[in-house]
Amino acid sequence: MPLTEKQREHGLIFRFFFWTEHYLRMENILYSFWSVFWLLNGFDKFFNGTLRATDYGTVSFGWFGVNRDDKMIHYFSRLDLPEGLALFSLYSVAILEIVIGILFLCIFVSRRIPTFVQRLAFKLSMLVFFVFSIGDILFGDRAELWEHGTFMILTLVTFKMYLETPSIRKSVVGKRFQEFDVNEDGQICEVEYSAYMDAIESELEQQ
Image 1 (cartoon, rainbow, N blue to C red):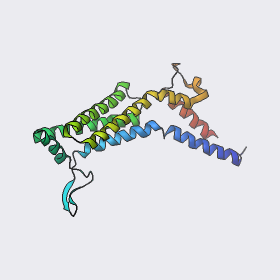
Image 2: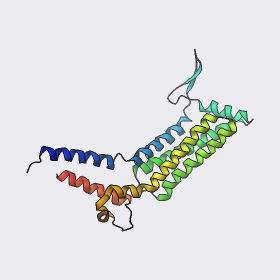
Image 3: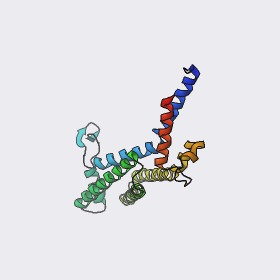
């Protein structure tokens, strides 16, 4: 029996909501943001912009736009610290940022990686922002201090969402919770949530 126009409209609406719940999750948006954030910030320190004289003074041009070497050397010189220490600190942090970016990318791609690895990404993020904040205070850069403090808050917000993910999944599954809570622990893990989404997708294809 062919579907009526109203049934088709309801089907399209349901498919849209299914797509947003399955793919456009807030956790996916935040994890992808952090992976891009850390990876670009890490590589940024290896690809300095080119300094050119303009009518408005010396400006840095390039994909990343800022000469991190000169900026870090300038910061350390305020405390009479050597240039070598400035560059060593800069590139050490850059490598750590790339590692954190890779960790968040792994979380984004698959939530089935070990829990301690997922938590490590958040811990390292907070550690880096904490170290940055200390540097901002010592170097007297209040604008950077405000920026890093804001990112610390966003990290905590993301971590809170990470902790509440099972409850969010439970609300999405709704009345079919008992059907998909296979291990009967009162929560919906990633495997069980994927099974629920696969079941919904299969039901949609049969319509």
